[in-house]
Image (cartoon, rainbow, N blue to C red; front, top):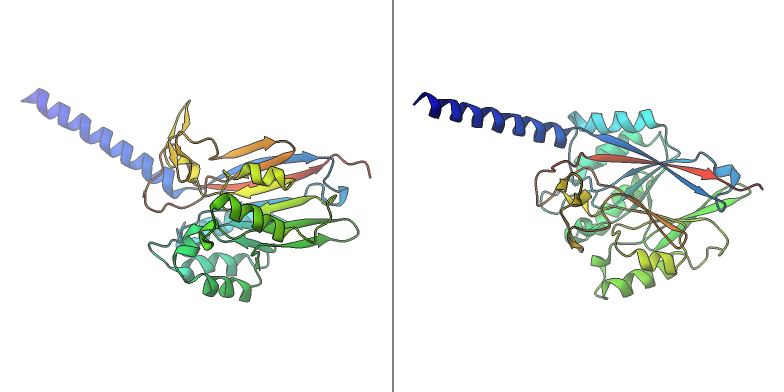
Length: 282
């Protein structure tokens, strides 16, 4: 009898510890610092700092998202990129996520593209309108050119769920439209929700792409990596960090929120900070 009680106590303690770990893992926010070096980055954009927020899914970190807002303020970004799934189609609460924008409006300009969850609400034009009212640059298969004498382009494409075309075909056509008026020799950045279309980004010669969607694989196995991700299946390749192919750099955020699967394992919610480093001698 004593041995059975001891076993129950051990199981209870282990369950409690696992529960506490999962709560801490899912309610705290990590910050990942990355650098992108390139001869194509103008010297005027050396040390330009971008904060990437992805896959927020209407999550809340502290009252009115105070934990998230304060962390972003401390990072002093030059621009804030939101790479889709700002809201969650299963528990749609736009107002909760808009509080983030309102509190950070004065910190840096926002650039935004849709994810599949915005499209799935069938309310995407309303969402875009509300963001536009708050001064967010809503990029719908288009680019904005920034800078003074020497400029760079920031482009964005809608999530492929917005189209009846095959995904690869849609991405190729959206990229063509987004950068049709951008000079070939200009440094190009792209916001695109889905990371696994890397070949299309390479073909269009995009210098730097920001994506999310994979949630870091949701469950990460130490020493192995991500377990599963939408569009990629088991043990996916594109879930976090920097990937490079033929001169195109792809930055993938593990994201901040959860959707269908309510917890993350070995996969802390993440803010990504990318600093541009110019190798140019102009």
